Length: 302
Image (cartoon, rainbow, N blue to C red):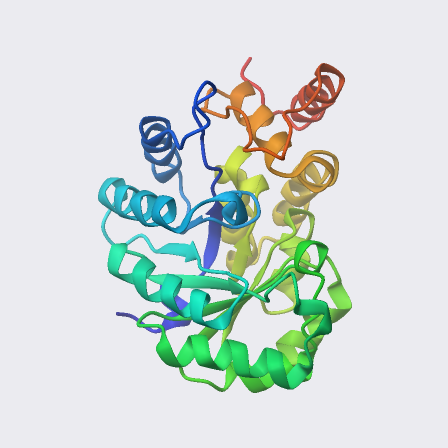
């Protein structure tokens, strides 16, 4: 395998999980259709079972089946990352090991959300280190305080980054100052990814390896072009494209999450479908707002 920072960089997309509208079960045929379309775009990897993928609403066996299925339809060499977060350390370890066996190239691990706010920095450190010790594939830390209610301090992240199997961090806090502190704390020890699609360009300026961004589901080529232009020195073009897609993050991804993304995907011909309960599909007024934002960004078909 190439150097991690080279192998895993650029635009990775945290895909949604389609469900059958009648039974509520996972819809593998729809998942295959979406994955084939996304992997025909200039993306750099697929991420399963994050917040956008409703990972916390999926059973472990569902995750395993979907991981194996997605691995089978993805082009060779394209990285597949799977969310392995659970409430206990032992369950997270088990998920990481089984997802690796199913075909994941790396696992994305968030802090345990239920007891997380009560955990000390030492307890969080021990949790992540135990997962990293036991995982047969690289671990990417997932900082998502909106849902996990845990803030990973830069000092802790820098310490964890020294573990040879903790190879990356996705920061979805939207806090630019904290992201800059992570880059200082980690140095070259791990690859940093921004999780906020409105901040991709800014994160690249700060030294990010790329973004794991939900807006990439709706505009994969545009997001990839931001990275390409930035790396080639065309800052003006990269900035213009960032301004174009930023409202999609702010007005669709951030307020509506997975249900909003599914509604947006349906507008551009992907399978969206309903979210899994207790999440609710968007009301018509919200769907109209999604359509307006997509139209303004030039993302709807003519």
